[in-house]
Length: 475
Image 1 (tube, rainbow, N blue to C red):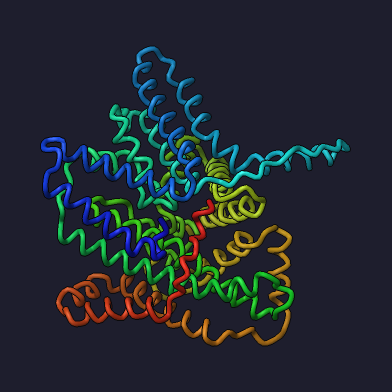
Image 2: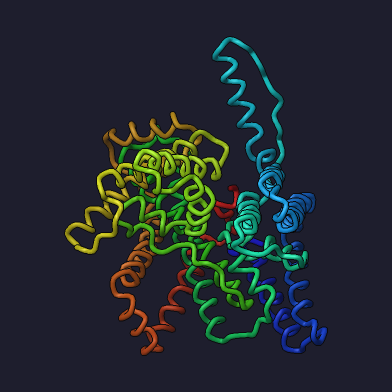
């Protein structure tokens, strides 16, 4: 179920009402919590099956595989064979991801390597559609398996509860990637309706919808126009499109994450906040502590730290950073552009660490230039993330130096700039005047409701209400 669709507008309220009626009436008596979990599980699988019924088998396979191997790790721990079990379980868990997402890329790369040495090979390609959310739920399930291996969390023996952990519908398509220790305990304990939590959820839902349909989708109209044929437009148009894409992907991905957080809170669950004003970071290293926080945490926990982190000297630290962001690039997609994008981010962080520029900076006269430089580096990298090939990315950069007036779609740009001004103002207030900002909103009910009404009217009047897909759903 796409959060910015009309289906969500009419269907989620029904899910919400039915969920809390089951809870309030204590249907099932002492087993009412079990009934609630089964209801959420049916909803989660039903919504996923609505998109593609066959792909629910992939979701179930990943769930069953990690569930059984976690129990096997716990059982075999005393026999010292858990290392073989974890690697077998990890490979089986990643098998659908490798087949659906990376098979064509791997075979094409292999064919290119053979062609380079004079061997002509044309391997068959697969035209299968990648299951929605495959990267997200595979990493969540795999993280659980490694947590059991490292004794951070005990193996879950209730299969239905574990199924809900992997398939929880607010986050399955685009994350965040929850850890077992965060979500499973909530699934297992009784959920009580909390008014403050629900109102907080509605605020996140409203703000996320604004980010998606007013900011991201409006900017996307301009970005798609320019990037469809960059050579037909001026260099200033390409520069403007690159800046707009930085905010488009932020509004798109953060919008989904905030809406997922809001839906989860309305159902009584608390999941990780995945974004924390990333474009106010003073370094690329700090950017990744604010952007897609759950993925950064996953990569740090299961890739960077197990390889030694920063404990084995400078050279090894730089290698670990590059390896981590190579994995990050590969995770995003089966294309050399994503790998190059990951390498750019890894190289930038190595340079920052080398010169001591990866630390937080509070002095405004230093922080402001560093924020602008970081934004420039991130925006430059986004060009390769967006374009279909590395060559196309460099072509856009070269073309950006050409002269000419920018292409101006005044209606689209004016609507987008209004949204962008609101987002920047809110982020600046939350970053530098957070306590005063929230205190003001708590004390002045009229101002708070004026904000709610303003956001709602902006969504209705300025939003692109075409149920446009989220960018990260394809990952």
